[in-house]
Length: 102
Ligand SMILES: [Zn+2]
Ligand SMILES: [Zn+2]
Image (cartoon, rainbow, N blue to C red; front, side, top):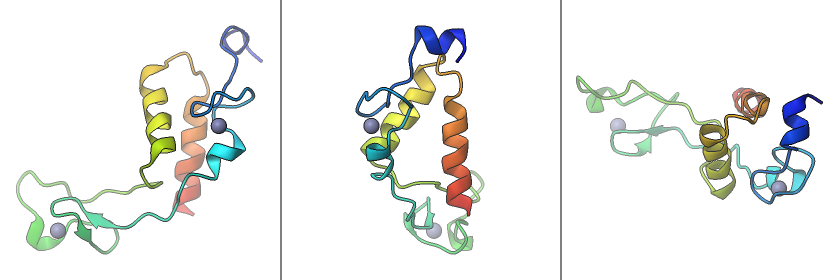
């Protein structure tokens, strides 16, 4: 435990339970069942790529989602953005991203 963990003890970012940034009860609310969507018209696509007919000069080539967007995901993202003193929070997000890739 480092000094910052002592000053700012880890709590679940969703339900505030002490111990970790994401407790087991909130972890099970994450859904790794993401749909591959073309972001231009929000239609299913193959391999997360933008449909060739949807491509334009400024369109994104594709995107990958690690988890479905819900209340828990929203709290994880906002906690990462607005709490710079969460020293090892990025490891949790990296693990979620890695888990989704598998
Ligand atoms: Zn929780
Ligand atoms: Zn498309």
